[in-house]
Each structure stands twice: as C-alpha cells, then as structure tokens.
Image (cartoon, rainbow, N blue to C red):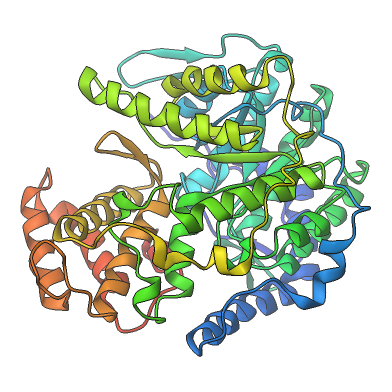
Amino acid sequence: MTSPPTPALDLPDGVEVTGPVHPGYEQILSRPALELVAALHRELEPRRQERLAARAEVVARVAAGQDLDFLPETEGVRSDPSWRVARPAPGLEDRRVEMTGPTDRKMTINAMNSGARVWLADQEDANTPLWENVVEGQINLRDAVLGTISFTSAEGKEYSLETTDQAALPTIVMRPRGWHLDEKHVTVDGERVAGGLVDVALYLCASARAQLDAGKGPYFYLPKMEHHLEARLWNDAFVLAQDRLGIPRGTIRATCLIETFPAAFQMEEILYELREHSSGLNAGRWDYLFSVIKTYRTRGADYVLPDRAAVTMTAPFMRAYTELLVSTCHRRGAHAIGGMAAFIPSKDEAVNAAAYEKVTADKQREADDGFDGSWVAHPGMVPTCREVFDAVLGDRPHQLGRLRDDVQVRAADLLDVAATPGEVTERGLRANIEVGITYLSVWLTGRGAVGIHHLMEDAATAEISRSQVWQWLHQGVTLADTGEQVTRELVHRLTDEVLRELPGEESDHRAATALFLQVAVGEEFVDFLTVPAYETMP
C-alpha cells in the first residue's frame, strides 16, 4: 500500500517548518496561521527573551538573601478599588468542575463526554511537545468544536461524542506551552518561535471561528508566569491576534495559573494586565511547590520541604497562597479555580474508598474557602467534585459575591515554608526517584499524562521529584528514618535499586534515568527538565 502524498505548505516569507507534514496537517499549518505565528514572533520575541532573563535575576537576588515581596512599584494597582476584570464570557459563567487532560483523540472525546463544565485541553504539562502532538492536538480540538470527532482504538472500540450540542458540552480552554519552551520545528527569520505562540496561533486560526459560531469563544489557560510583565506580553499577543483575525478585543479570555512562587506576590497585577481578557486565576499547586523549591533552593533549612507526600494544602504557606488567591480574584470580579485532584479510580475498592474521602475533603475545603470550581484529572472524579460544589453553590454559577474581606495575607505568610510539618525520609527520596524515572520514560515516548500508583501524574510531578532530590543533596539533608545524609552516592544506589524493581527491561528506562540524574544531582540546577528533554526528542 502506498502512502498518501505529503501535502505542500504555503509558507509565508521567512517562515520554515521542519517537522513532517502528514495528510491533514496543512489545514492546521495554513498560511494565515503561519502568518500569525510570524507576526507574533516578530513583535514579541525580544521582550520574551528579556522576561526570561529577568527570571534568573530574581533567583540570584533570592540566593543573595533578598526575599520575595509584594512590588512597591505596583502598589497603586493593588490599592485602587475601582478596576475589575471583564464579566465572565459565554461558557465560563459556571466552572464548578473542570476536567484536565492531554489533547490526544481518545482523551478529547472522553473529556468532552465527562460531564464537566470546562475541559482544560492541555498542550503543556499533560502533553509532550512531540511534533505530532502539537499539530494533531489542534486537529482534535477543531473536530471537537465542530462535533465531528470520532476514534476507533486498535482493539476496535469506537469513541464518539454523546451529543453535538456545544451548549451541553464542556467549554474548551486550551493550555499552551509556557514562555520558556521553544518550538524547534517552526522558525521565523531563522529563529525558533515560542511554543506557546505556535499553540495559540494554530488554535485561533483553526478553531476560533467555530467556537464563536457555537456561542462560546477561544479561551486559554496561561501557565508558568513569574511576573506581571509576562502577562502583559500575553495580553499584547491577544490584542495583535484579534486585530489580525478581525474579532473584537476581549473575545479571547485567559485564566492564569498561579503556579510559581514569584507570581503569588503579583496576583492582582497579573489580573490587571489581562483585565479585558481575564477570566480568573487557578491555584496550580503542584508546580507551585516545584517553584518554591526552585526559587529558594540555596537558602538553607528553612526552605527545605519534607517528603512530597507530606506536603498538604493545609500547610501554612499553602493556606496563605490559596486564601490570597480567592480574595484577590473575588475583589476584582474574577473566578478562583482550585487545584487538581490527581486520583485515578482503581479496581481496588479499599484504595478507592480512601482516595474518594481525601478528594471529597480537598474539594470541600476549596468550596468552603470560596473557590468557584476545581480540577479533576479523570472523568470518574467529575461527580465527586460536582457534588461538593453543588452543595455549596446550589443554583448560583459561582461565588464571586463572596469577597473574603477576612483574609489578610502578608509576604511573611507566603514565605513561611519552615512551618510545614513532616520529615525527609529515604522512602520519600526513593519515591521521587521512582516517579521521576517512570514519568520521564513515558514522556520521552510522546505521552505527558501517566498513571503512577493510582495518581495521574504530569510534568509538575517530575519537576517536584527531581528538584527535591537536588535540594536535599545540595543542602546536605539527613534522612529522618535512616540517619544517612543525602549524597550523590546514595542517590545512585537507590536509583539502581529502583530500576531493578521497575517493570520492563532496564534498557527501557536508560534514557530517562540519564536525564533524571542530570537534573537531580548535577552541580547546576536546570530551570525546567522539559527543556533538555525536548532536545532529545526527534
């Protein structure tokens, strides 16, 4: 059987696409889409590089003893009571349950059939930037919006939408890649383009008009920002894109993940920069833990977190973070969305019972605190989250009227990592090694969401795992259960033990092990493990 011919792309001047172009890709990599990519890159790339360089300066100041704090130069924004973000956009009024997951075809259908109010269609942490995922994810999103998506598995099982009524389906909110990730298969004037700008431009050109025709709009979740000027960069991207596409300003809406330590001190400023495009903030708690470790990794015992499993949302510094997020959002008329429940339902009823109890308590805390909705990572968890928020919200679509004026969070409260209960143990060290290597073994094959020990893990999990190992090693932490000091020799010994216990052949995990050790025990801290990992991909 002969393969179908490779479609030709109509490339604008200065634009090159080096990834393979399979049949159907030309509809996503259209000339208007690539022209938008080029326009965004030429306008914004110098400022993107400036903002990335500024991130390193913050870490250097913290290492020198200067703590994060609320910015004095933006006090006027925080103290001005007059401004509000835009009113909730169509399809985003009620967000009590949000389903998260990658944009492969089967997952897209399952998410759209999940019963959630919103689907976070993830082109970032639950995805990998394999070229086929980048383009085919956009095909799947377009087909979902059009109601034409279907899928037949290798076993012959058929998947399709339970309804084509877009009003009855979850509202799609696409998460593009963060500012730190390039797209190596698309260049403009010989320069790599920001992966997030590629994701946004392709989505807008393929799906925005269909979204508007369905009575909703093109909406985004913006990840990994560390400064309000990064939000301004996104806002400028949206203005440029809307003007070029001929759609009114404010049509695009964005929910920002507050998932970095520096961003926690700039929540109001981030809402302000995006205010005509803003639809709220989300407590991206797993990446937030990673960022706390990364930002304060050299500052001594007061910033050493215990085993990952011991750090809960009731830790004082995490309570300060979520309480501040809710009060900030509601004061400005923005939705506050809670963190992800990563549990995957199991065939083991005892495991299920314990997990459902924890998830229910977690969602109850969020709803009682004033959050307007929350995330789950599996369709089976949608009813649990919905029940909790239904009980608190009733017929109301949200809790925006609950201003939480009782919340008073100081910089010292956000920085109080030392008050976190728990210990660093060999068990925790071993778990970090196992999860890091297991996740990376799958990530390198092109899958970004991995079920490990009944939890849906994404890149944030691997980041926490390797950054904790790095910090424990470089701070010379002594393990509470064995009395051993964390050394490179100990990490290598435990890695060998973990590899003997992992399923499959040791060769299956060789590349992942090398990458994990590179970012976990190297002398220099790598800002994002996905950056060197991406360079190893085809």
